[in-house]
Image 1 (cartoon, rainbow, N blue to C red):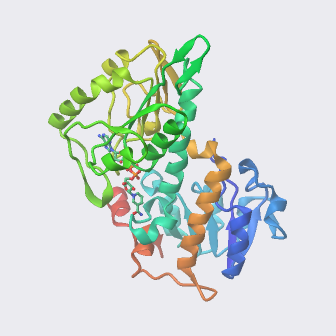
Image 2 (image 1 turned 45 degrees about the vertical axis):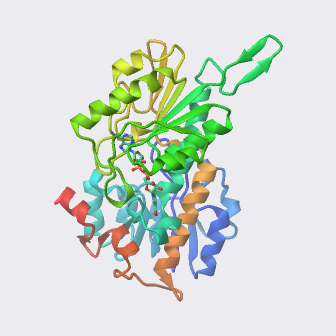
Image 3 (image 1 turned 90 degrees about the vertical axis):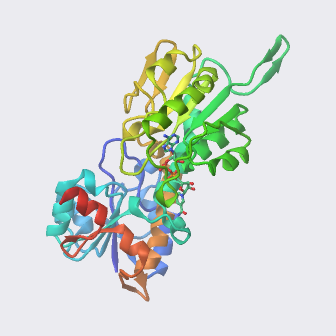
Length: 371
Ligand code: NAD
């Protein structure tokens, strides 16, 4: 079984789908890896680190004989066109946003795994790239915020008196939010967390944070949140305003599957914040959790700095790639049995993650979005 590892071509993407330490374990599964030259370079992994494996100068040449192609972002059309019919593509597909790519995968009879669609069941946790990448993005967010703050995070006692610890509020306590709370706590800040799923109260408290109770319970399906009604939004806004106004840093991470990022902070609430306060909006990718967020930019609104970073895991490309590669290894162990590719569509992980197979869209949500 031949596996091709692609070099990422999307702007700002530094990650690589397979790191050398994990690639050696693919050989034990009976997989022979070919890498596109410089595949891991942006993530600090030199070609030589992959050992004595074949290297190809470009993606088209790398995938030509491959049975399985590994990537982070969807490959360029020319690379998909060079894949063998029946070959497998594994990447973050987001097919709903790439209808032309999906059409090409169908026409080319490629089997495409959408890593963002790994089901949220315990057995699949080790393959869940959204979680592994969100843990890193959440870790990083308070660091990004900290360097934009005109004050320090911990309490500091000096010869001329003490400086008070900063208050950090994290809104949205999924994987990224809890990770952000942990970083802020380690840096010495006083931390508060807020989410619409009540089970996050204890999770926040276990990380040393106070939970902000708004009295709204919006537990949705599959461990996700549902969207709020207008009444609930008003109730939440009233309860949160004081906490927003008192925060020195806010990290927002709220997401509802398949929808635009929910608006958690209004322009009026930003205007009421302390001078020098910073908001790190990890919801920027989905349009932003804060009114005024410009995805990919840092803006100043009055005396408040508002960051809308995109692809945060890429900033931690070395570790992000390591976790992504381990997620892929765990998936490959499910696909490759006794040295052969065996796609068991009765397995809910396979069935849930394969988006296109044998000329058809096999994912119900994607089919509804595109057909
Ligand atoms: P997510 O990225 O979809 O959303 C981030 C957070 O935003 C969630 O906690 C959500 O409740 C919150 N949110 C949504 N709307 C909000 C609003 N209006 N106000 C405030 N907060 C709002 O979530 P996620 O990080 O992917 O994970 C959500 C849950 O699923 C977590 O409990 C996580 O542990 C669980 N999970 C389980 C598995 C598994 O079992 N395999 C895998 C991944 C995640």
